[in-house]
Image (tube, rainbow, N blue to C red; front, side, top):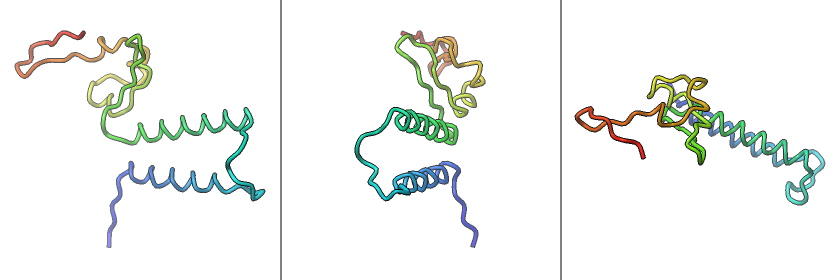
Length: 111
């Protein structure tokens, strides 16, 4: 029997396993309570890495734009849709990367 699993589903499963393993501490203490600054930084770094893994694995285009309209994150799906590489698009104004057109191919003005 051949079982096929998408990369995104595999990533989600791996993240769940990692999270379960992290909850188990070698000293037997619970995972709740006061968190040191170093542990908080480690946790934030881990969460950022997980987010990047998930965003890289999905085929849908995902773009994070800050309040000034500058692209902060641009996943490979967005790259495939727009033709811009991740490195090229990050740091640019979104209006220079995305050009919207109507059904007739006429440009739609960005607000």
